[in-house]
Length: 378
Ligand SMILES: *Cc1c(COP(=O)(O)O)cnc(C)c1O
Image (cartoon, rainbow, N blue to C red; front, top):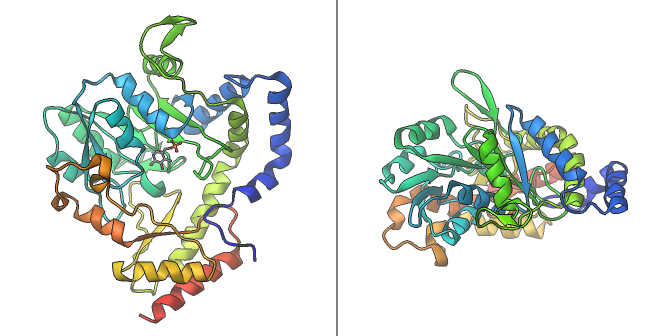
């Protein structure tokens, strides 16, 4: 059995080597490192994958994608943006950098995504936007969020860094890919994401051609024409080598997703009879691409479980250990813990297990056996 890892990018790279090398070679031979043909081809291929006439604006990373989306909205300093209290820090960070006010919202404990009912209670006249994060690979409840947006006139920016390829299923049966449901979608191609490169990368999605042009301009120093600046921008580019790698990985994404779903299914069955484990629940309105397979276990046993697993050479991870509203730079004295019972509980109970497309049956069985054995003693 190969050593178990949370992700196994090296095995993937070795399998894709013969596909990758000619593309990388072309980049080197043409020195088109910035905005070369590979970047344009990738943007088009990803747009095609997403469907629905989406335009893809590549950028340097997922955090920049969020920053670009907010810069494009041109909100006023002090405007409020609803964000989940349980997520990666990027969203909140860019809001602060732009002088906007993140308003933290509790999550639904079943899906770990933002709770629209909790969000509604926090809406004020200054609330201008909401950022549903499709956490761990499953869509947030977008239909309800779009209703809120309509009622209160809010922009919706999807953070789909963990859910590329997931499908939202509307009540009328139609589907849309995560990141293409609202006005703007933001994603990351960080190596460990479901669609990753071998460095940093990100993209913004929109169906609005004018918005796309502005996003492109902001990502390119705010220039419409070389050396003529229309707005304050940033320098945020996906480089051509990463784009070439992403073209190859995009071809495999459907297979990779299927493999993740099979691993999740295996874990689900294995843990069915383990009372102390709450398995990830799949909402009726979304498919799940299992960026993470995240269980909940009794808080008082979690540390012991982590040590036990690590002793057996099984890695695991806690995404995320602390609610954002309790993090030092983001503490909001007026927002006490009482607003966040689900986030606080999730932070104490979650544990993410190894899941990736290169997992072997023997590894999955070994992990499940040891977790089951651990709980037999409690
Ligand atoms: C990874 C991630 C990001 C940021 O992506 P980077 O490319 O690392 O900047 C943003 N949001 C979520 C939910 C993420 O998981």
